[in-house]
Image (cartoon, rainbow, N blue to C red; front, side):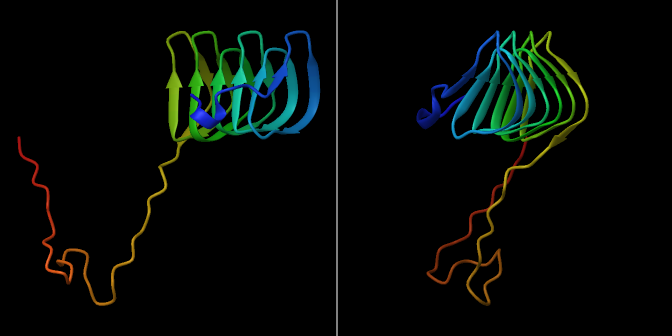
Length: 141
C-alpha cells in the first residue's frame, strides 16, 4: 500500500467528525468520519465507518467504507470486503475483495512507457555500432 517514505497517516478525520469543503494534502489521509467535497492527497484511506461524498485524486485509494463520487489514481484502487464505491474509477490497478461493491465505470490506465531515441540513422532492429548483437526472444511451447 505505502512506500517506505509514506508509511504513516498524517491526517485523520475521526468517526464523529463531518467536514465539508476541499482538501489538498501532502501525505496520507484516513477518513473514519464523513467528508463532503474533493480530496487531493498522496494516499487516501476510507475506514469502515468512513464516508466520502465527492471526488478523490491520489496515488492510491483504499476503500473500507463508502465513496459516492469519482476516484482517479496514478497507481491503485482497492475496495475491501466492507467497501462500497458508487462512481467512476480511473486507475492502473483495480482490486475488489470479495464482498466489496463497485457501481460505476472503470477506466484502466496503462503505465507510462519510456521512449528511447536511437542515434541518427540507426534502426530499432540494427546492431549498435560498437559491434553488440541485438538479442531477440523466441517464444515456443
